[in-house]
Each structure stands twice: as structure tokens, then as C-alpha cells.
Amino acid sequence: MLPGISPSGDRLCTDCAGGLGDYICSRCGEEAWRHYAGICGRCVLTDRLTAALGDGTGTIRPELAPLFESIRAMSRPRSGILWLSRPHVPAILQALATGRVPLTHDGLSTLTPWRSVVYIRDLLIACGTLPPIDRYLFLFEQWLPRWLDTIDDPEHRKLLHRFATWHLLRHLRTTARTGPIGHYRNQGARTQLRTAAAFLTDLAARQHTPQQCTQADLDRWFATTNSTAKLGLRAFLRWAIDHHAMPRLVLPPVVTGHSPPISNRQRIDLIRRIHTDPAIAPIDRVIALLILLYAQPLPRIVRLTLADVTHDGDQLLIRLGDPPVPVPQPFASHITTYLASRPNLVTATNPGSQLLFPGRRAGQPIHPTSVRLRLHNLGIPNLNARTRAIRELLLQAPAPVVATMLNYTPHSAERIAAQAGSTWKTYAAGDHTRRPTPPRRP
Image (cartoon, rainbow, N blue to C red; front, side, top):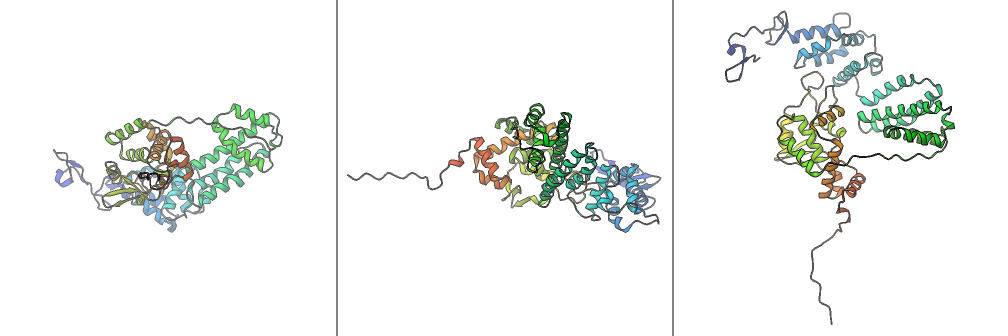
């Protein structure tokens, strides 16, 4: 421990500081901050964990031993003590330790409050006690029956259950086989269900069932609701028409307004400020540069890992697509600085996380909404800045090249390039060197 401060500002140990006090734990003999009565915080945390995870015989349930060691080894025991002081946390752990609730994903889902249950579930997955699952898919599957119970009309409930089971869940599970579905797909599915329920309620208020829906009903809904509801309802309407739950009607077009991208001068000014402003945190600096330089969307940014940052000699590379893209100086130094000070590594959640941006939940990255708030506080318009960045890149190189390196689809890259006025698409291949025109024969 270094509790002392020298006149020059250096940190000093207790011996060199000259009698600042006794920091030796009376139980374990280690030098540490004592929580109370001469006992260090780690010993106090061990006692409280033992009580919370005990099986009633004075020992810890064997299946929960990895969780016990994971929490006990955290670098800041006080954080664990404060977490265990919340009344519902020991209650959840005791229910699992004594076997009142099965130590399974389904068993955990019977406990409350759900936020604490989700946090403990992530810890159990991270330490290997529970098998990995797609977090957001599981949350949606747990939310769905509770939400359906709030629908009063039994016919509406039956139709929404069919839509959720055979359309939404099927698509989410298919996506989860190749990668995590993420927060936005989970929220998008919930929005579609809520919008469909509101539409059915509106029909019922006019004494119409879905089978009796008319084109006038549909046009009136689209004329009087907002763009989010219009977009959220289209998937349900297509599904209902295809499965003969509604008459075959014409879906009104949805015109969504997109704010224009920032100018390239504004983008350069933002890059300059991100590079030079000392008040900007390293994590905010790296995220902002990934948007302003490489036009990366937030869900892709938060899923980057340490393995995606590599070196080729003195050149720093970051794998966004294939091949990895080079990071020029001075921006490479910002990434190097951030790697040495990644946040959220001092608790039991992510001590050995390989995520580039670890979050506060075990095994989970920082939440995209949190990133969006950080960008807002920096004055960086996420979508507008990203749109300008990808347009500028597509003006400098052919769309297929940019698409593969930045993990964009070729179709999207070609479309954005056309909007940006790129001339690469009409560039003729071959040798364009000028040759003298041969003289005409008389």
C-alpha cells in the first residue's frame, strides 16, 4: 500500500511515510485497507459471500464455488461488499445456494428483481457455472409471455402470439445462430409487437376485427401516426396478409426524413478536436475516431475485441473487415493509450475481458445507448458524422474495396457511392496511357 505522499507528490509506503497507521489485517495478516475492527475488506467480503452462497451446512455449494472465487478475487473488495449489502442480492444467491430454485437459466428467470437476476446470470455464465446463451434473445423469450398476459382481448392475444412465435422469434433465433442479435434487434421486435397491439386496439375501437380491416382503416392509421409506428407495423401487416389474417390491402409507403450528413469541414474539425482536447476520455476518443475515420456503426464498435487490434511491425492495424485497415499516426497512439487503461476491469464482472470496450456486466460490452450518450455529450452527431465519413472514403477508393475493409455490404457501398457522386463506378478498366495516333496512309 502507498498511503503517503512525499513533498514532491510521489506515493510512499507506510514505512517511508513515517507512521501513518497500522494497515495489517488482524485475520489474514495482509496489508490492506481495513473495513472495520481491524479486518480488511477482502476478509469481510469473504465472510459475506460465504453466508450468501452457503448451502445451509456451513459450506458453499460446489457448483457456486467458481462464482465465490470470482467475486472474492476482485481488485476492489469494497465494491463487492456494497453489492452484497443490497437486500435482494443475498436473497437471490441464497435461493440458488440452498436449491430452492434450480441452478438453470429457467430457474433464474423465476426470481426478481429482473435487473439483479440478469446481472447474476451474466456472472454465472462468465465463470462457467451456466452455459452461454444469447443474452438478448433470452431476455426477449422471457419478456414475451409476460407481455402477452397484459393483452386483454383473447383474439388479439392469440394473433400476436402467432406473429411473435412464427415470425419474430424465428428470425431472431436464425440470426442468433451466426452471431449475437444485440440490443437493437431485441428492442425492435418489442416495438413491432407493441405497435401491432396498438393497431388492433384501434381497429377494435371502430368495431372492426383484423379480417374486417379496410383500406380506409389502414390509410387512416398511416396518416395519423408517427414514422416509428409506421415502420414498426409493416412487418406485422405483411405477415398477417400472407397468413390470411387480414384482407389483401395495399400498404401505404413510408417516407422517412434523414437529416443531411455533416460537411467534410465539420468532420475534420471534429477529428482535430478529438485529437487535441485533453479533457476527452481515452474511451470516448477511440470510439469517436472509429466513427469519424472508419464510419463504423455502434453495434459493430462495441463488439470489437483485443484480437481485432494487431501490429505489423510499427504499423497498428484494426480488423473491421478483411483485410484489416491501417491506423495512421497520431491516431494509433490514442488506441495504444486506451488499451493500457480500459475501464470496467476492477470488479468481478470483466477482470479478464477480451472485449475492446468491456461493459459493467460480465461478458458484455459497453451498451450502445451508453456510447450514443457519450457521443451526444461530445457534440458528435453519430449517424450524420458516419454518413459523411463513408461518403468521403467512397470518393477515394472503389466501393468493393471500401466495403470489404470496413465490413459494409457491396450493395450498400455502391448505393452510398452513387449518392456521394463517386466516379469509380464508371471508371473503365485497362491501360489509359496515351499513344500517338498513327499517320493516315495516303
